[in-house]
Length: 543
Image 1: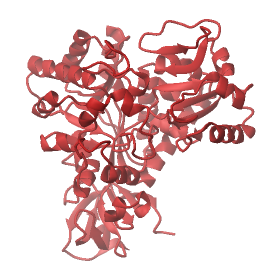
Image 2: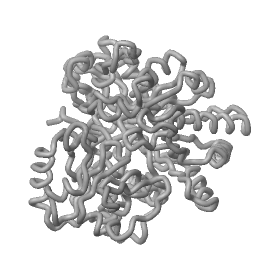
Image 3: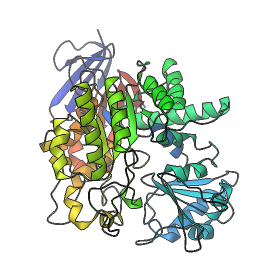
Image 4: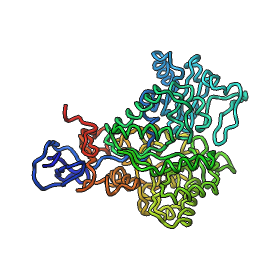
């Protein structure tokens, strides 16, 4: 007898009638066969398919953000003031009021926040607002004073404390090196962000460890509610590895987690060796390792993206790589030789080119392996590099919610910083797919909303910024594939996940609403049931 039988469903891929029998955590049959099972679910015409693979998110920081002020909808100073004051009224005991997901037009188009604006909103309590891309933040004077920046501005490689005309910090902090001292003021000490820069926390109490585990579990339960059963984390350190391993050993992870180790430019050989060793650990329950993560650049909005041409407003300036080419290639060769997958953050086309160079050198040194090294984001790609990406078998891990103008993001200042003559080279999903590059979709949560429905809607409705800019949209089938089979393949799990086929893991979703209507609204669908290895990790059907 089967463990579970789902009947009267429609296949997400094509709308055809479908029934699925599950046994011992696997798909036993798709259509046909006996109709006896320990439990039968009548789907009532709901849409059935493989569960989503979230190919790029930040689990720990996402869990912490669930209890922070979301400012994604704010685009003017008056609304910002009202939101912050209301939030702070009942949180006077917090050492830091922290908002996140803030757009760069937070206080109005053409303006950037500064400490004086924030002081007028909240003068006494430290306030820190983090940009939607997590690469910049704005602190009030109380926060800057508390972390020592008003007394002395340190020299921070790869980061910047922006100064005002008076020579003092104006409140804008760029990149984690400048932001971490303010994060450290928070009640959790900013531990959720340390993995992004490859750092470790100091001594952590048992109570703090328990709180951190709770934040991780909150994040994973939120993933399950959105139909996600594999979350590919994009920042990891030894501390997170311990937390996730303990949760996995206790069988407390509701969904599957892929955890990398973050390698950073300032790390010495001993630290790199320790992280490579940790990345080579075998799976533990629903937790897997096997990969490392690096950053080659930042983002356009802080002029830290590395490009192949000059920034429009800064002649002679193209950004700086975070890794020297020789050092990056050396690490790539070591990681590749160890059988580890490499994922590298690249926003500018100069960063993409530098990373392709490094991956190519690894292939020459070690021979062509089925490594499926990844490039994360690819906001801008030079046309000359598309064929190289395809030839090396590199995975393009991209986020449909990232193009300006999508998912509530404003067009400015990003598209002007990119430059009108480069718009045709941005977020080239269709160009990459037609070249044979494997696509894996995600959201970069908490940078963007976690919901795959929001991301799918954004992918289907994206508008070109000008008539001569190519339409890079994909079909609904291709978008779903990038969110399921494509994500599974990017994580070397195509033989396990991502499709509605016998023998694969019973990681499935039932959707309320017609997925074809996602062209019209992200609210056209919701997840009624999420199964991970046949276990219901989200269920609205049982009442």
